[in-house]
Structures are given as C-alpha cells and as structure tokens.
Picture 1: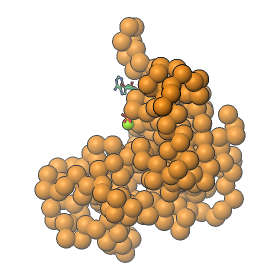
Picture 2 (picture 1 turned 180 degrees about the vertical axis):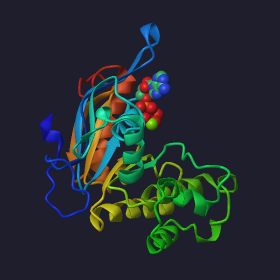
Picture 3 (picture 1 turned 30 degrees about the vertical axis):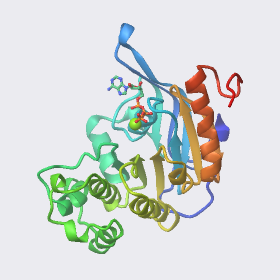
Picture 4 (picture 1 turned 120 degrees about the vertical axis):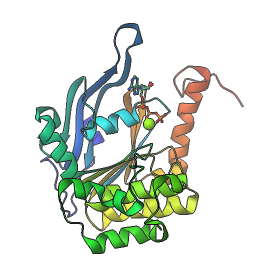
Length: 274
Ligand SMILES: Nc1ncnc2c1ncn2[C@@H]1O[C@H](COP(=O)(O)OP(=O)(O)OP(=O)(O)O)[C@@H](O)[C@H]1O
Ligand SMILES: [Mg+2]
C-alpha cells in the first residue's frame, strides 16, 4: 500500500515526516464496543496524507471516514496500529502533549460543526487561538471572515445562523491558526454550490498558496475534484486511490460502490443489468 502516498516536492511550512507525509496512519484498526456489539470501523488502514497537498476521502456511509479522520487528528485513539502527525507518533503522547499538538498543528472541521453556542461568530473563529494563548493574526482572520462571507454575522451566535453559515464559521475556525494540517469532515455538506465552491477554494488556497495540508471527507464528486488525490474507503478498508481526480471519474468509481450495495456482491462482479 506504499503506493498510496503521493510524493510531495513543493515548498511549504508544513514539512512532514521524512516520507513527506504531514499525517499518516499505519495498520490502523479501530473497534467500537465489545462482544456481539463490536464494530470494526477501521480494519488495517495504511495511508499517508502528503504534506502540502489536498487529499479527499470518499466512501459509503459507515465506511470509517470520520473515524479515520478523528484518529489521524488525535481526537480519538486507535485500537491498534499507529497514527502520526509529521514525525510524531500520537500514541506516545500524554493527554497534555496531545492537546497541545492538536492546538498548535491541527485544524478540524467537524461533521456536526461543534460550534460553542454561547460564543459569537467572531469568538468561535478565534477560540482555538484564545485557548492556546496565541494572538490572532488580525489581517489573516479578517481575510478569512470575508472569504467565508461572515462579515455581517460576526456578533451572531450559532443558533442564529443557518446550517451553511455555521459550517462556514467552522471552516474559518479550523484555518484561524494557520495549522499545518486541516482535517475537514464534509465541510461543504450543508452548503449550496456557490458557498461550497468558496469553501473549497479557501481550502485549496490553504494548500496551494500557503503550503498547508488538507484532508477532507466528502460525498460530492465535484468537491473531491478540488483535491490533488482521492482515497476511497469501504468497510473500514482502503480500497482505491485516484490522483488528479475529475468529478466524472470519481462519480464512476462511486457507482461501483453503489452496485455493490445493491446486489451484495463486489462491484465488477457482474449480475446487474440495465
Ligand atoms: N462511537 C461509536 N460507537 C460505536 N460505533 C461507532 C461509533 N462511531 C462510529 N461507529 C461505527 O463505526 C462505523 C464507521 O463510522 P464512521 O462515522 O467512521 O463512518 P463514516 O464513513 O464517517 O460515515 P458517514 O458518511 O455516514 O459520516 C459505522 O458502522 C458506525 O456505526
Ligand atoms: Mg462521517
């Protein structure tokens, strides 16, 4: 599976491990629950996310995408295997070290936003910096606010925003501290195509102008086409990857999953007509 790590030769502050990955998991397994109720959400995944590149993760619902992101970002721990940010193995860190690493080096956009309801938009955006005791770069935050179109909502609270607006606050928050690696779980899932396009352009700029690394889960082939490469998960396993994706090619690959879902057999195994 080493072929699943694309090489990175470009510049960037997000220098990763010696193999050029900003984040990676090796032989990652994650089992939720025990006994009959056990669910193997990740089943031996090895994948590297190249530094300074934009990678999309796709796969059917329940295939382990969020679990992979949470474990790669140090928000959850693996049952076995290892997770790395650059040259640091997360499993060797204590709670406090892990918290610091997440604050300083990682931005996360959750599938469910996770905004703090009692804080305003402006306060939510700078929260990670405030927690870390870092002074926000006012110019950068200002530019972010404009890109995500939240200028006229800065004093609102999350409950006063639409789902798409909350999603944009979450994206701005993840980028506020210019982290090395941004993990985004369906950051455009609740946006119309125009707002979604703006968020994707913002993530793309973090990668291609700022040398950051972005890892994004998406169900949308058009969103995935913004990435430099796409990795596909199914049943907790890594099943494919694609470089220089186009929406059309991604859609074709996803149809193969759908075929499997319908006839219960592996895609390409035949048996479906029409
Ligand atoms: N906390 C948990 N406890 C038990 N099972 C869980 C837990 N979190 C996830 N799972 C299970 O692990 C599997 C993978 O879940 P995960 O959330 O990673 O999927 P996903 O690919 O992100 O799906 P979606 O596209 O619907 O968001 C699923 O079968 C899910 O039910
Ligand atoms: Mg998910």
